[in-house]
Image 1 (cartoon, rainbow, N blue to C red):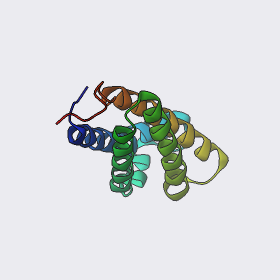
Image 2 (image 1 turned 135 degrees about the vertical axis):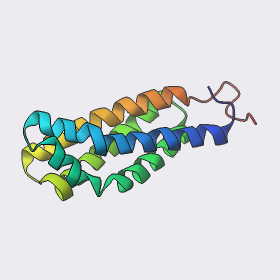
Image 3 (image 1 turned 180 degrees about the vertical axis):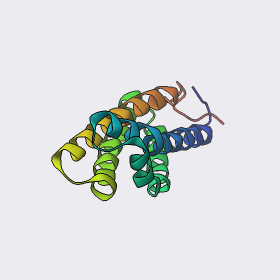
Length: 133
């Protein structure tokens, strides 16, 4: 969609970084509250210290999605990153019991897969192989 390689990388970094912030501030606290692991306010407070880390990791993943240039690679990259991020956030902020790891791992992986597919489709390589501007 974007002819310029630099613009594709910038859009990937910005969109996926914003998705990382959304993961820690809205998605995971909502899932935690819905499954009864904790209430949403405490979950947001527990995850708030790690939001910047998630933004940086997901922005790096967005750069990788733009670099790969395909929708399938975007889903794979961001889904894997979501799984890792969810498991690590569960261990350091919520708890390392089986239920917490499972709930946060699956929900983060699903969110990362969705974001990766959408951003990957948006940032697919143009027909000229990405040699535009």
